[in-house]
Length: 259
Image 1 (tube, one colour):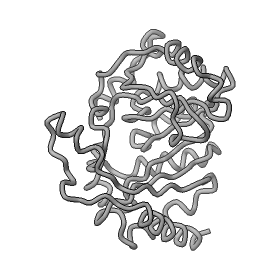
Image 2 (image 1 turned 30 degrees about the vertical axis):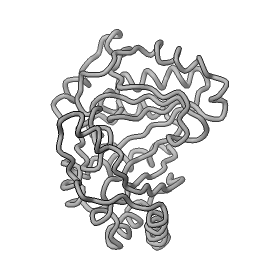
Image 3 (image 1 turned 90 degrees about the horizontal axis):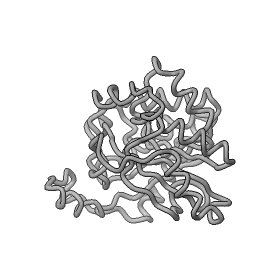
């Protein structure tokens, strides 16, 4: 978390206007509505055992890009994004909060739909004003709930769950539409107890607009090998789409119990 704290203290115009970007995708179709320009931010404090982008973890790496450079890349295919927009994902975009805010502010000034894909893990109430400034320019949040139970969350990600819940509360207070994303991992997050707890956890939110239960896959294994890292979930089989659909049904049933 130290890297996040240090990086968030950058205040000069040059620093706020420039961020560390891992990569961009011109025609994203799974990170928000419509066809989208997707910006993968570099840096993440989470160490999710199933993460398929370990190359986005380290802060201070990647390509330095300005808001103008990102918007210029967006404008090259602007006609395709008419029913889409721009999505910030990662890594963890909130690690670079001032830069993310400036990027989304510029996007909104051009009438572009903005979507934030985040775990919410770096949210802190003492920085509520900074987050409130970002919220002015966010149209939709895809909030990744890694594990529904507090102890399971720590074991799976290495981070406390409390900031995630506090972030979800802040989104509701700000009236920002939220879609929950949850990866169903065999033997880790797919038990009925865990899925029911997830439904009870998210069912209270009035700003909840959708739920994506995503099947765990092993496509990131080769990245770990290339980076010389051991894969934490070695031997865990991928989940079928059908099983992920069944898991979602359990969550929905529990969600309705608290509504």
